[in-house]
Image (cartoon, rainbow, N blue to C red; front, side, top):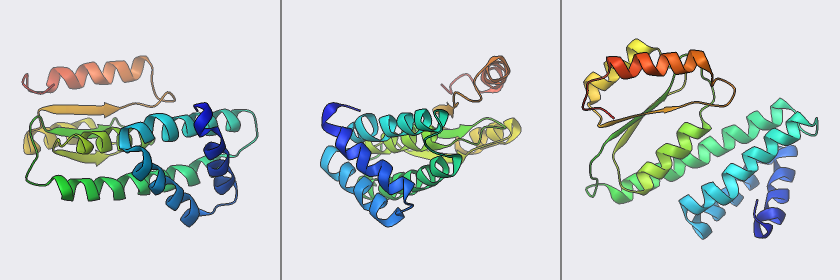
Length: 178
């Protein structure tokens, strides 16, 4: 976190430790309003997630805290994205995006942040969510006809097996889909 956001990060961490979801939600919403979505993601949300991961690794937080924060962040991003989509309706432009994760991937915050940034820029998009079977991804591509398929991969699931799945998926996609 930048020096200007360190005090805010400590406050957010305190709210996470105390499970104060409404206050945490309010702080997150205020941050988006004050900073704008893109700046908020890069200066608040991403550093906060990094800090929670480090604190968990050091035994300062437990998985339950990370899960609690993830749920509140996902709720925040979904709510904000719905408001932005409603405001930008009718002004959407191409390319269109389809967001998902590969089978076995249960982490969805990267997916939510990327989809929110997409809507913030006025691009049409759909989200399939996490842990989507390859055949279902391909069926959704055929039905929705996106110009871009965006796959979110967490550090915990990255590796050779994921690389192979992405290569196989790329080969099965229509050539016009990025």
